[in-house]
Image 1 (cartoon, rainbow, N blue to C red):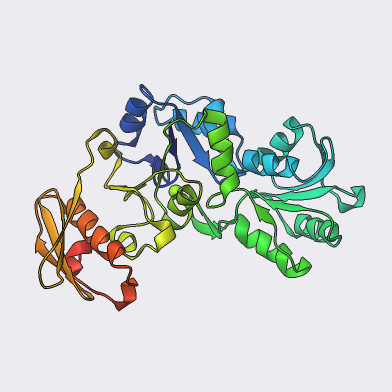
Image 2 (cartoon, rainbow, N blue to C red):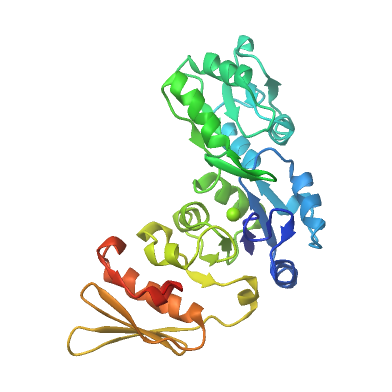
Length: 324
Ligand SMILES: [Mg+2]
């Protein structure tokens, strides 16, 4: 089972990321492929349709949204059929309704809970309704996700986390969160797809990889989106990927083995493929660059991660992250 993030892995802006469609199509021949998104504004059918435009074969059933994970979480907090104040768009209201809840947009209806997800149409009025309902501390509050920003056609715009923070400032408490890096969306995916030999692919250490680690799912970081070599080397203990790939072509290639060797003087050597780094105390240098910068990065990351030392205390060879 392959679970994959979308933005930065499958597409960026309007364009498919090179090799992603071919690699995921190939993976789908031997494994179930699930598409996981924190974006609560679109329905699974909208997401599937969008992905099909790039040439992928995707059914709505292959998509797990943070709205679905949020409603799953909601169902553990309030009785079935409760009235729910929904702060969000069609991607959220449709899922809340499908789960048998009654949707309201007014705090006057004494909702049993509030669920909040991103929609480009949200304004002060809706955030105020959430605040009024949440004045009662017994009313649970679920956020689909806490992404501070959202990439859109014209640039970076405030995301759901920013709108949740506005309500938080008014009510003085925080919601429970369903989307990455929190656990519910991973649990929703495992429950849907069966959970056999899962692998999670993402482009962000702080959401995709940290979330997969917390959920006990092996992870792949692809360098086609947000995080690059520098961030990999600096990744904190909870956000380190199992595998690092330049792009999704690597999904069907054998992953190189990492070899560690300790010298007599306390120098540690780490070799991946034909790349070797050496580390002594807080100094890490390239011993042999080899042919593939990815192997050099993997070796460097292993040396740094093994050391248990924080990145800001280290003297790192810039060649490891493609610097001068
Ligand atoms: Mg992403």
